[in-house]
Image 1: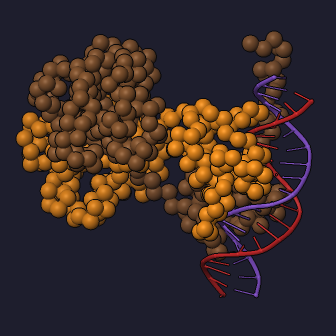
Image 2: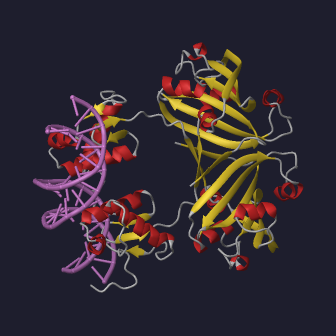
Length: 245
Length: 245
DNA sequence: TAGTGGTCTAGACCACAGC
DNA sequence: CTGTGGTCTAGACCACTAT
């Protein structure tokens, strides 16, 4: 720690606020106080520059950032307006299971149940954009949180994208983590559904096949190809996606 | 100037693309091609400005935007680096059910099954931060997509936040849409789970109570209070959250 | 100390909107 | 046409990091 002794209480004042931030805060206050309402036009960049005694570029930065934050909208040739804030949308964040468990301060462990070379059936071939019968890698891993199974990860991998997949030690790096490192991620498709598990999955999760599972399907793209198709089964009674904002 | 094979600014863009965008795209290509890897330092603003033949401010804008997008990280006094791919995280967007159905070009219809004044039990009181026995509004609505039930919305509303709730016509505006308009949204908590439905919900969804449901629980905050607590049940076999990026 | 990013200036030209 | 935002320049000073 610091030994100077006078730092904690003393340094309240010299908060040197950048001009663009001061402008942002002032504009925000106008909106939040209701002084400017949705759809209202706000002063032009020229006017604000004059008012705050700064250059137009500085005003531009403040207004641009508020526009990026969807607080203002701008129309070239017309003006800048207070945005309609209609964000119904709720965003759910899905992270790597190992990272998530560790973030909760719990112990993560995984168990490799299968690791094999296989050939694509019709459905897999379609998902990968390959021909039926093409070789694929296949792994099934059970993830535990404090020794309780919380995920069965059933993953198919394109050998062209990750030829070293079969040589990995998945107790060190999860397949997800390995693939992220091995092949630059270009895109993701995903879906979340609720399904009852097949018997083998139910057994691995130590639940009844009657119980609902939260199923995350995820397809990743890399190097212009489908890199990996994964189905992740979570017991519905002890796993959920959650968040807030 | 000798330009080695490493030269990244050599490409002429025939289209009329703003310089900062061209720079962004070029930098992105270096990363996505794997030429620059996570943690690598990229050239300084000065160097890039010289290489692209633009002013430092223009390079600054390109690099700043990539930093805002979490593709780069910058350290004052040190340099600019390729960010660790943190976008393990997959974001699922949850929209209003009516909006979502309409966006698919399908017909949305809702059926009001219950609309009543009730009193909070222990669990509800805890969720609302009120005392047990306090009055609440309660509605149950079934949403249809092309006449097939896809959601049962079981909602409890704080009368202090939305006193007019009981007078609304929910065939015009969904409860969600009404609440968004009536009370400024300050925050949201949500979770997604998989559960088997109680019998009454199963009946409304026209499914068996054995079938898994995708359950979205959502709690909204407004005016410093909990505005609404909703549980939305979706049949697992015909509804999923999905997206891509 | 030299090099980096963070901020800012006082101009400029352009595309576009609205009159 | 004027006024708006969109982009860009060629400098500048500062705070910070690394050596």
